[in-house]
Length: 455
Image (tube, rainbow, N blue to C red; front, side, top):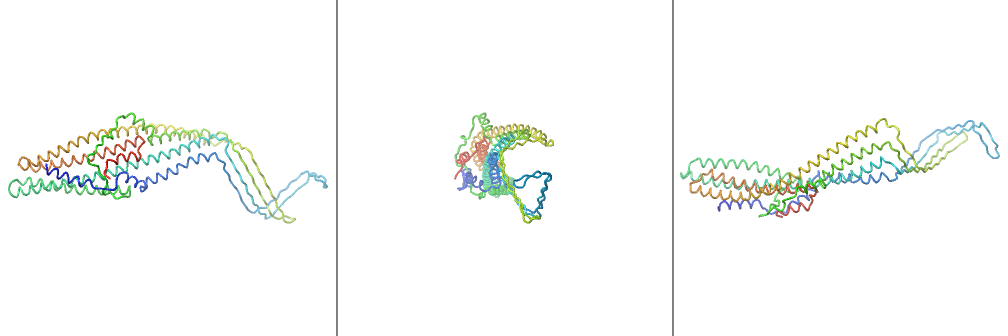
């Protein structure tokens, strides 16, 4: 038993290094470093402007039109009646005004504010919903980042555990190989034991190369995600219990997910946006009324037969303007039919999303329950495998057990210990996945899981 405890202690020592990088620190770093998440943040910022766009639809718009150029003008009026004091009256008069190579400058200021516009009202509602959709998309991105960081973090720990366990196993196999060689040398055992130990040792060496390569890959992925070195991460605290992560009311969890899950909310908003699109095209043929104010000035300055001349025109207009589309060539009807079909698709997509999310809740819920049961079984398994290894080693010393028996017992011991650690990681990750599915994964939830780690 003493040799088992020594090997077990070496395994724990190599797996519990002090570190300043815990789960929360990794998430904070990823929030600022991961380009995919930063892109989602920028997208949410862009989407939030939809709300301002909705308000802007009902605000006045002001436009200035101005221009300058060259013009030749000639205006002829025939058959006019003319009357003026001291000049008398004249019938069938002819008036001619003409300017050649004149400069024409003009400017018009127009202000318009919608008073009544059903189509614009539907568009404004749609923009409000798109703004809410951007917020839910960012929430979903936050949840995804939490889970990606946790998955990458636990992947590194699991790979480190596997390598630590393999190295401890390697030391034990080396010890068995040395014993087998010595016994063979002095004639106390056949060469079979020595060859079996050598084959087992060679197999461990091959596994070590593969496991070390996998660990390097997991660390690289973690560093790419967070920008932090993936060495010396905070590990599981000794003697922890994850029973507090157990959930007991699946129907309540599913109901919470239907009310809070961002994917469900996104699908609901998508359904409402599609309905507004349908309404918008239905109302595209409705009359609209605008308040319009307009002021313009035009100056034509040039020459005619009598010398220099100019014409100055000023006009102002304030009133209401009615707009009534009469014919669009079938475009409005086609757009409305398309929108009706897309609204039906959005409704079905929303229902499918609800089913997927409900399944995610069930899966995470059951993973926690099953994982906790496995942890308790593996804890007992570690004790049993350690006792079996100790008994097998004693039996080998007494000649009742072979080297092969010891090697198998060693492999079983380190394997069940590794499974115990992996079960812990899986339960913690499942707890975060369940929180994400229920729509309430946040820093507080992450810190609750982080409390199980050394920091």
